[in-house]
Image (cartoon, rainbow, N blue to C red):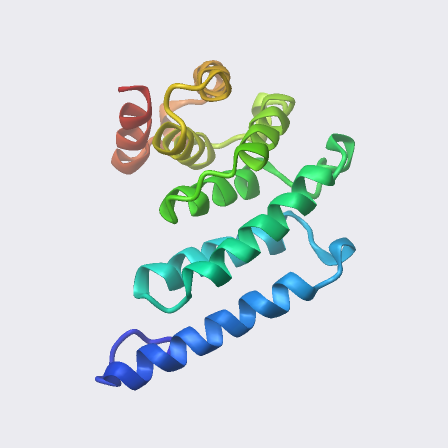
Length: 177
């Protein structure tokens, strides 16, 4: 199921959807206190990948996004340090962008949390993924504009040798276009 190849055909896709929908259902039933930045970002990134393969139903995906979005938004910002780092915030935003899912409260909350982080918390990959995700999902909002201004400042602290790969540069160029 997970290999993406092997000629399983319709059975493989059906089995993949059953598994991914089951994972989504279990995730929605998990205790709120059991979630952290890494588990949220890993699940949403994995389900975004499953969506690309057609292995998760839109209804299951939306249930997870709403449930995890509510949990993240209810988490006090002071609890984010050491729990939701810049990389995890970028992964969550990027997963939502890959799913074309705009969750206003979650995206606003993550942008505000990111803007309260020290510039040293970010690397090239996290700023390029954040910028690209917000520019794709909500390009004209004040939230995106504020986040992009913050990311521009953070980018000034980074050195070219810090990982400005062609992909990172193209993501940033796309976000600011």
